[in-house]
Structures are given as C-alpha cells and as structure tokens.
Amino acid sequence: MAVLRADARRNRDLIIATAKEIFVESGLDVPMENIARRAGVGVGTLYRRFPDRGELIAAVAAQVFGSVLTDLRAARDEEPNAWEAFTRLVTRSEDLRVTWHLAFPSGRAWTMVHAAPESRDVHRDMMAALDELVRDAQAEGSIRADVGPGDVLILVSIVLGTHLASSDPAGQVRSERSLLLALDGLRAVPGSVLPGAPVSTEELGWSVAEGDFDNA
Image (cartoon, rainbow, N blue to C red; front, side):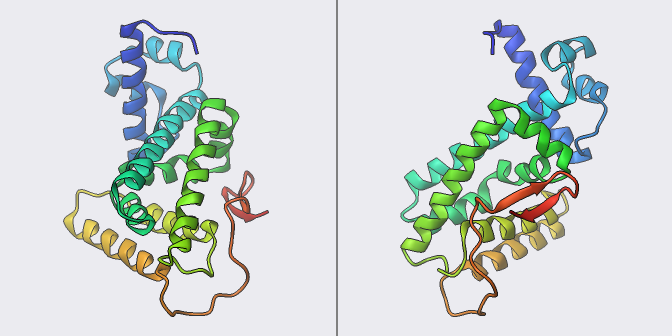
C-alpha cells in the first residue's frame, strides 16, 4: 500500500472505524453512501480509498483480526496461565465479537476477506495464535483433552454470534450467562463423552454456496 498523507490516513482510518460500527449494526450490505455520511466524508473520498465494497470489508477485517491478535498476545503476556488468557480473550475482546460479523454472515463476505492479502494474512496469524492458545490450555490441563481447537472456535462463535453486544441490560446478562456456560463446558472436568474426533482449525472450511461451516 502506498504511503498516505496524514489527512488521507485519517480519512481512511475514520472510514474503516465507521464501517465497522455500521457493519455490526446493519450488516455488510449497508449502502456505501451511509458509511460516508456517518464518517463525515464525501462519497468521492470513500470511493477513492475503497473503490468497491470488497476492499472496504477486507480493510475492516484486517483491522479487526489484528486487534484480536493484539488482545490475545496481551492476555498471554499478562495472565498467569493459558486458561486465564483464553477466558480473558473471549470475555473481554470486543473485536473478537466483531470477527463473526465479518467472517460468517455469507460466503460472499468470506470470499472478499480472503481475496485480499492484508486481511487473509492477518486472519491466518490470528487463527494460528488461537490454535496455539487452546493447545497450551490443554497441555496445562485446563481445557478438556477430547476437543480440538476447531471445536472450541465453533462453540465460541455460536455464542458470540447469537448474543451480540446490546444496550439492553437484560440482554447483556443473558449473553454473559451463555458465554460462561460455554466456558464451563470446555473445562477439563468429567463430562459427556463426545461423538467423533476432535476438530482441528485446519478442518474448519467455509462453504461459499451455503455460507456456513463445512467439514473439509
């Protein structure tokens, strides 16, 4: 990417931040003009920075994935063990919730994110770090040994995708309860015998036709 002037960089960052807010609120198909209006920039400015919707979605995804990776690394550095780092990440990383808006709403969105090197590469790094975190928690005996990192990500994605950040206090409590129940289910304590084999992150695929998880 070419080096931008300070004002151009500010406009680009503002557009990305605004697009992230609107994508969470209204989905990825919101008119580009709405994004420009809320960001306080001209439509021409938006299109000069992002000639099509796919480029904007990829730029937002790159920022969000990078933020999650930063949150994960900070948790690993500051928490006493892998389990505490994992629970901190899934309960406190706001951008982890946003990843599900960008990665899972449709096969088309997933294709856009993975067509751009800046979002594809940071997504790969984020997934590798999540994989390592889960395996470290298993090695220390805190996450049950009969699951794979893919199982963990599916479970967390279901909870985070169903219970989105809300201004409704009751909704926030329900979201927190669901997430804590999911975390309890991952703890390495006697529980139900699971069918099949642990799912790895490599086995998690994205079906462009269905817009949902497929096992590779």
